[in-house]
Image 1 (tube, helix red, strand yellow):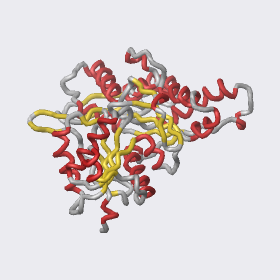
Image 2 (cartoon, rainbow, N blue to C red):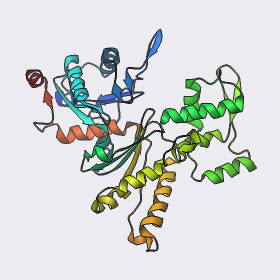
Image 3 (cartoon, rainbow, N blue to C red):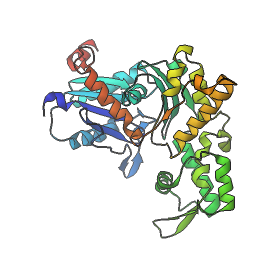
Image 4 (cartoon, rainbow, N blue to C red):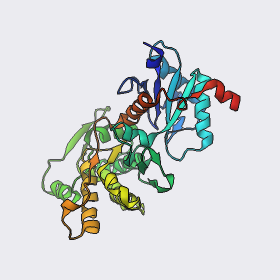
Length: 345
């Protein structure tokens, strides 16, 4: 493998690191960011490193898992609202780790790069953050970014609350159980009224979950009610508008000349997305667009509303990083050289 092929893409998330070579479409290793040393440590919070010392063994293990290669170039991702000091510390960390050239890249535009476009609305639904980000030609106006209080952790907490009411027990429902139920059984109702009616009239949504203790719990309306918090925050006593409304409003504050492109390039990503969310958001946004923008005009004259989501949405930041490296690797100002960095600092 040539040194050119040794370029590493390193995506830092709240729950997992995604690490691999730029010539690959998917990460080679996806280690958890949780460290167990007698007690639990989480050196990364909302995608931002809080404890650089505890990050070292995680990076060592991840890089070692890639095999024997020369540490040369690495692209490292960072989330929204990071200070220049944080980005500087990120570069310094990987220079000290042994890499010769570093590039740090904002995550949101990478999501679009992974889909072959540079403009659109990026909707992140992660464990520690939910955000709606307008991206134009690869650039983010952070003044237009919207952050929501409802995050993946909120969904977990609400699911736990609902299941405790059903089972009259909290001791059996640890984080691992809740995460497993969320991953395998929960979904987004395309019509909350229809699914609630279905629960009242049938048992078609009833599932039994067997716990490691040998005991079992049943789950039915909780499968979709926990996800409904994204669209009805008042269920958790949060005074905010729905995720779909935030997306619509974010597009409407963009320049009128780019709104059509934004409407047809709404991209979902993150580990806290659920089956049915793409269709629910697309339907909600389309209804508001038709009722408030088109009104009585022929819908064919309006913008196309399209929400994209795929099975690879959890890795799309990594994939976008690979695309960016392949496009920019030979550009002289893309990489920051280690010697130049320490001379200037």
